[in-house]
Amino acid sequence: MCGGAVAFSLLVGGCAGIMPKGSQRAEMLHASTTEQADPLEKLNRSTLRANKFLNDAAVSPVAHGYQKVVPDVVRTRVSNVVSNLSEPRIFANDILQLRFHAAGETLGRFLFNTTIGLAGMLDVATDMGLTKQTGDFGQTMFVWGFDSGPYLMLPVFGPSTVRDGIGFVVDSVTDPATQTLAPVVGIWPVIGVQAAGGLENVDLLDDLEAGSLDDYVRLRSVYTQQRASELGEAVGVKVEPEVVTESAQ
Image (cartoon, rainbow, N blue to C red; front, side, top):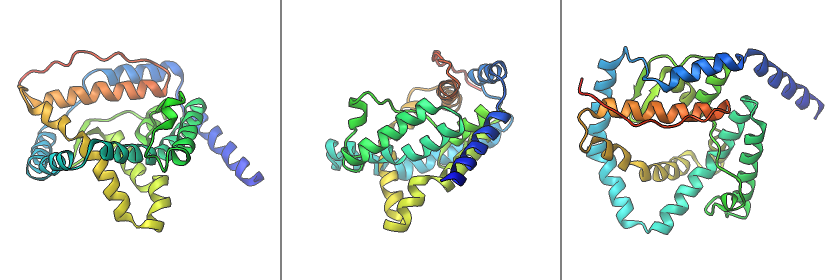
């Protein structure tokens, strides 16, 4: 116990030591609310075309079939389980960001939803006033002072930045829920449940494509504003969404 307390103190002290001051983080957040630098646009557009082909050929048909065949109540339970599995990862990143109130709410959500909520199928924590928090390693790197780097379209997974792409890899490899459950039930059931939960979001890309002059520009704008809101939450700044504009390029 003493060794763990010392290690935790060193970790928190180290995180606090490398975090930029509030004014510096405010400047970084302001930069995040504007359009992301996109020197990789040609590559990003090629990746988006590949992602759209995969979506149209496989993901969208499977998702719409899933939504049509599986009752709403079952899909809601699956989505709730996936959301609950993300809580340990959010908790870990909230601690690394020194957001202890957010970490406490996240821990409470996970405990109540896992027990009373039957392994997360029921979201009883929200009804108890415990709000879903944000927390990922890209966000943590922002809090620590890392610049976003260029806008980056990831294969399959979609819009990101260089910083958030690195954070995504770290979260995927070190995710506490996956690390805990995979040795017990196997990795494929965990991936299957997470993939099923993700099928609920497939309409977002379909909607962006519909009636858009340039879906690449629109997707980049939507991502930039949504991400700025999440980064603002990490440093206690409310970022108001703006009207998404686009132009053919």
